Image (cartoon, rainbow, N blue to C red):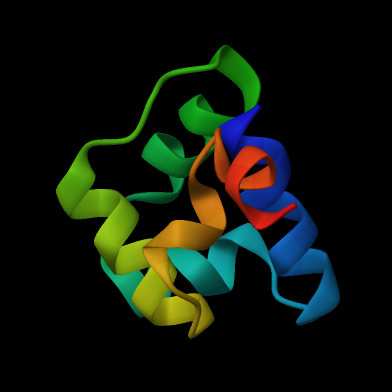
Length: 69
C-alpha cells in the first residue's frame, strides 16, 4: 500500500525508480524490493524518498485519508 502512493507520485512526476535511486542514494535493488516484495522502507529511507519527490512525509501515511476528510 505504501509503495502504491510512492509509485503514484513517481508517475505524476514522470520519474523512474532508477532516477529515484540516484537522487536518494538508495540502491535500485532496495527500491525494487519495496515495490515487488512489499518490504517496508526504513524511516530514514522514507525521508530520502519524500525529499527527492519534494513531498511531505505525511503524503505517505497510511491513515492520511482518515484525517484529511
